[in-house]
Length: 90
Image (cartoon, rainbow, N blue to C red):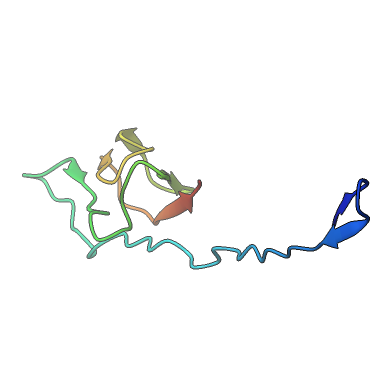
């Protein structure tokens, strides 16, 4: 509310702010296979939402991430379950 003290006129204005609650897509890709000829491989999260306002984090409780845990395509060298978390900000 705005009041003009010279003439006592009042003006009101409302604004609605919407929340962006659409979650990002976090797609860890197909299940790859490690073997004797391929002792390490890259996981493929490229089907996930992407852009400068997204961050990613791969985690595992029973595998091993060699590199790229905060990108879409980390390199691993152990069997296990790998999880991809995607965050959108801004």
